[in-house]
Length: 209
Image 1 (cartoon, helix red, strand yellow):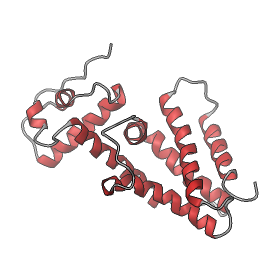
Image 2 (cartoon, rainbow, N blue to C red):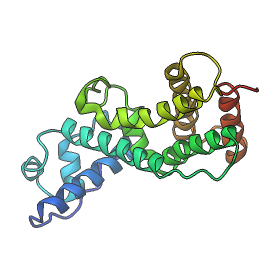
Image 3 (cartoon, helix red, strand yellow):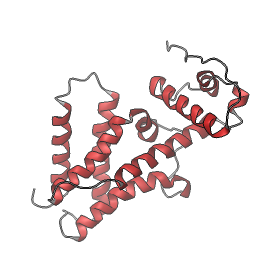
């Protein structure tokens, strides 16, 4: 049986932007602690210290809150990827560094990563072709464009850089989601596992083995 969400003392009405951020932070924390299933606006309101009707002044539903958290998670990932500056000099090492940005994002922000990638059916996920799903598409496009650039330089195997990018993304997600969801598994030393996994992924994409 899950422990009830911690109830915060009732708060006076605050500034709209500040209260929205409190609601989003509380929802993200509750999802990280208990998962999405069973999460209610009442739990979120109690955690923030406001009434349920007050919460509805900022968000119409639980799904609207999750939608916002979902998009914010992807926007944060996009910011990390856009801020990437390679240190290595070879294409293989640079690709591994770039992929490490994704891994580090997930492990440093596990609750945001869960909302973005690990909640089945969360808030009715939108197709990536939907303009409303733009943050998610932006995140994938950063990886796709990087692989496309390598492909244009004749450095990748195969003839479909989009398929290669999707395979890379799947490989990254598999590692990150397992490390988040199964922390008690007897993993080898974490950096050793990550570096070996990234080396395996880059060997599967770039020419030269």
